[in-house]
Image 1 (tube, rainbow, N blue to C red):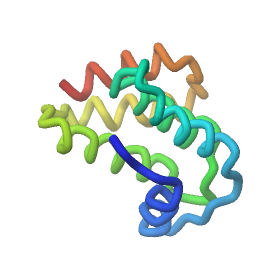
Image 2: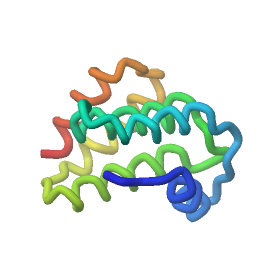
Image 3: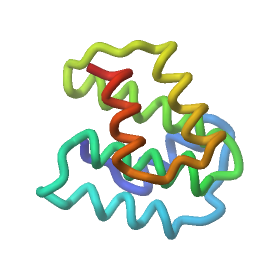
Image 4: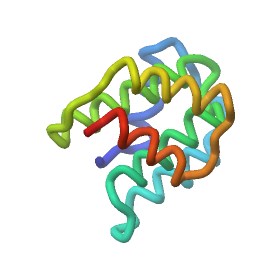
Length: 111
């Protein structure tokens, strides 16, 4: 999944948010260039940056859901939307920051 910080900011602005802090986003975007990481792990880095670090003033969960749905469409994956929503809210609410745990949760919702 190729996505830039500008793309993320534009997506989030569509949900009414503005960028507050971009340091974790920069790290997550940089991880997208690591060829040793699988696609789900790369998505997990982005989700952690958005759901746990809350870089946007509003729309963090909606931005994360949009990313997940775009990822699924791009990779021809099936999505359990209810489970994906449940996992997204859970990651944000419980401040789950372990990449392996986030990746596992997303893999269960997007197959």
